[in-house]
Image (tube, rainbow, N blue to C red):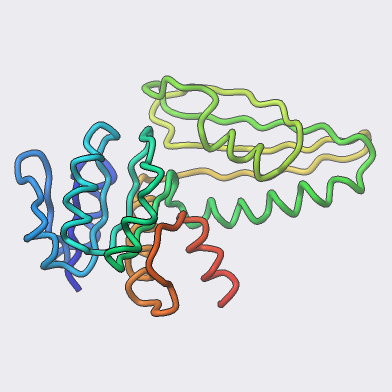
Length: 223
């Protein structure tokens, strides 16, 4: 199986490294074309939002299944229709950590279960590297959404921390903690490769555009 890797920044570079000889890399120095991408089985794309429109056109022409890790981009409303029209399959995600999706399931259970507790208070704290300017992180906001509770969110910026997210549920007599820590950015590469293999290996996935969480949930139910 050959995989186009479009964008060779931190995550894209890690993907190419993990794929080895299976990777066909494209970047600003070696720009992708529909003809070349179509020679591969699937594409994994990690490009900035301002480059997405051009790559979308290339991918629609190529017809190759695609995994997208682009963030900060407003996806066209008619994109699902265009992808279905060429009988292709695309997956879009903002966080490709498989472990984070396990956490998503756990947060849902904790949120529902906390209704049985007496006046619980919820606090989410996230820590990232000093170069990360936005706070709170998008993942922390997702945690609050998955928990489905009014949670206080706080942030810290320390050294080269890849990402730590913690939940504390506190009542008068007990505390519950949930923590996720990213040790290496390769975890996102691992998840993107898993998604690519799942997308082309599962014949039950019909043409269309999916969120990474949908792909994970399908595998989770079928395990």
